[in-house]
Image: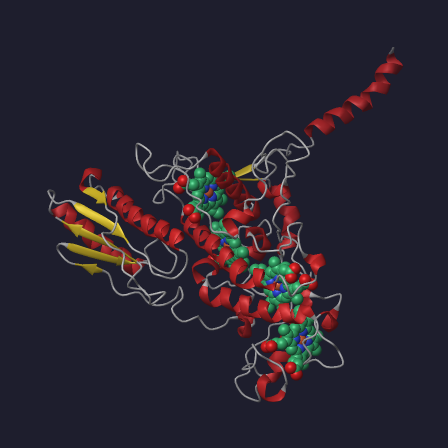
Length: 457
Ligand code: HEC
Ligand code: HEC
Ligand code: HEC
Ligand code: HEC
């Protein structure tokens, strides 16, 4: 009897260990990130965090400072199309850094025909040239997301020619073989969506096609926008990806009392909002057009090229490489802002007795500090004349897709309304109105077009 018991004991212990393998050993730590009582906490397992620290250290490649004097690369070398204005010594040092970031094992030969460095016959060199432009574009034009920290090739590549966290469109379900019906990519645990039973390819719709993410109704009775259960599951799948990619909980960005409400969200959510637009821009403008350049073996089951997600840069950290400011050490990768992009100055806000105009940055529904001052003047005015009613209309520029822009214009108007209500103006005194006419703006990214107009009567 005793011997059976002793023999079963290890088996029972093994069973218990298997059962608990999915659990994390306490103690778990939590950090409060919002007001008391809102449940805005970050939950950390200090041991898992400790294990991850080595993955998020900068590589220690020597900085490559700009060389303002001396010959330029384009004067000495034969085929430099992007980095032509870089000093020759800086150019050579940058090639060494790029090799360490992208192809340390393969060396210069990964991109170059060593007999003739100017030769473009290797696809990797052609891709790398576009990647240099993409890196410059991120650093110069997406400051609302990457701030002064910026990115280098290392942010995504970490010593590998293809970043570990690139995604391809999931293989379409073969509906002939079974009678299961449309699974919508669900019930198949995938790390991309935190092992949840949610569609496991939230990337194609939201990080490539720019589909609408908001699902919550913004009026008591659903009018206009009604999101299906399917669309809602897609939104949650994307949110799981974002949380997982950053290693944070939902409450890093949201007050879970109301997921859609912007004034109650943390400022991180606005940064994430820009991040979603940035990723879509990189995939559409830079990565996807390289599909025919890379060998077919690189492509996914649906024939598409590996693309960027939040995890490509973040890789489980709230800031890539824990916010190490690498980019500033490689000035050739900083690039010059594209004309009219996010950094273009906005006109000052208009604050007249009957009319206010507030301007927004490219793709942004959030007011910057200077524009928020205009909002302050409007609030003061509404408070001093308690009978008047404000009517709010949102506008957008002509650049980009119409559906996304209309959504953006509406979000701008709603944010201004929410800010007025949050400041104590009665909701009955603030109305939203669709603009009577949207101007046929052919100027593309015109800063005066990205605005909210408030008429006061
Ligand atoms: C990840 C790809 C990649 C790696 C690895 C790489 N290079 Fe380059 N190299 C490029 C690209 C892209 C250009 C063209 C840049 C441009 O058009 O502005 C270039 C251009 C050059 C040129 C200019 C040739 C000419 O006359 O036009 C030289 C020289 C050069 N690289 C040297 C090196 C050396 C040395 C190494 C190894 C230490 C190296 N490269 C590693 C991508 C790479
Ligand atoms: C935002 C993330 C990101 C940054 C930053 C980035 N890359 Fe990439 N890179 C990717 C993705 C995603 C791919 C996968 C596409 C593919 O398979 O070609 C890729 C592919 C490549 C490839 C082709 C590899 C192969 O064999 O298919 C090269 C070469 C490359 N990158 C070089 C660079 C260089 C050089 C830089 C810095 C100047 C850089 N990348 C910066 C995301 C990035
Ligand atoms: C890194 C910041 C961030 C994290 C973490 C995050 N979200 Fe979001 N969430 C956003 C942003 C930004 C939007 C708005 C996206 C847009 O409209 O483009 C959003 C939108 C939503 C919406 C749609 C709201 C509406 O207007 O209808 C829901 C629901 C949502 N999130 C739920 C979640 C859940 C659940 C989690 C945790 C699993 C989560 N979010 C984690 C940033 C975040
Ligand atoms: C091209 C690389 C890159 C990609 C792709 C990227 N990010 Fe970031 N992100 C950064 C950098 C760099 C920072 C740090 C900026 C800083 O120091 O303020 C950052 C910061 C953030 C922050 C602020 C964190 C904090 O604590 O201040 C949030 C939130 C965030 N990213 C969310 C996202 C989401 C969500 C996605 C995907 C939709 C995404 N990011 C995709 C590079 C990237």
